[in-house]
Length: 411
Image (cartoon, rainbow, N blue to C red; front, side, top):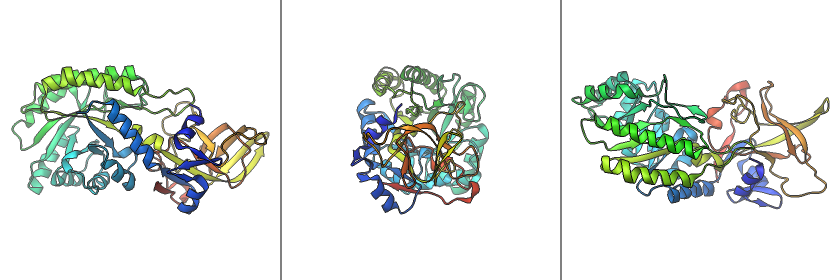
């Protein structure tokens, strides 16, 4: 996927990328320092609107806070989505600070501590339990704070989703309860002081193939309906997971959202609603909502030529954007879309040339763009890395080599 598509999403004015209505140099001056992350609230709102238009009206839309837990981003999205999914006590506090109803917050993830379970029980969020041991700890937590905890079982499905960036279901997993063990667990909790509301099935992430995702949704609904037969009470919550991907690399094509919307319409209308009329169906998305709405901006501090290869050295790097450096799961490193954000548009005097963009860290791993075709790069230019709205700052080794943390802004 060439950078042109990403530039067009943000707009250009007088040769500068515009983020949140502000030309890049002005935005950088307002932030006060580089590097920084900037998230465009207009694009966040637009992405949710496109999801609402494509997906069934009675399907609840959830935001996975882990994708970008910046409080301002979560606050903005809390007014647009129906559910916030969290994966830690800190994320839970961020979600609850938005004023959302605790019953619209779900808490997933293996290894929840006793303190986290007490907090979750006390506040009334839905705890998506991942093992029999966690059920016992949640019950103890509820007893300690004098409440009946609300829970759903996170299910490790008996199938895997091909083509996902990360497989989080199928085979042995640290995530969830194996599907074949769920009926027994439901029987064990039937008489316990636990409000078991339903199921969460999440099989994989970052998938761009709508046909594969549609098939996974079909199998997920089949699995949930089989498991619902073993529930002691009516199922009131079904989290169908997500996995919607965004294009990062040159050959990536955007996900066919309309295809998925049609499939979910059919599944809800013909399968899920008739069988589980009381169930709130949720699709949980993180990267798909925020990923394309964010940019990472870093300033060139040096340029050099080493044995015929041009380098641009910037004041940011992999300690802020580990994924763009290729060190967060890429088997073969590929460049994220990247531009000089202050030199956009045609120029006969500024013909593109291959430049390798590296960060300020003392390691060869600190690579943001390898032999990227850019106009002549000069000290002071602002380099922009796109697709930086998800799994950027909080998924990076910010303490590595002791550099300052970058600023994050929502504009």
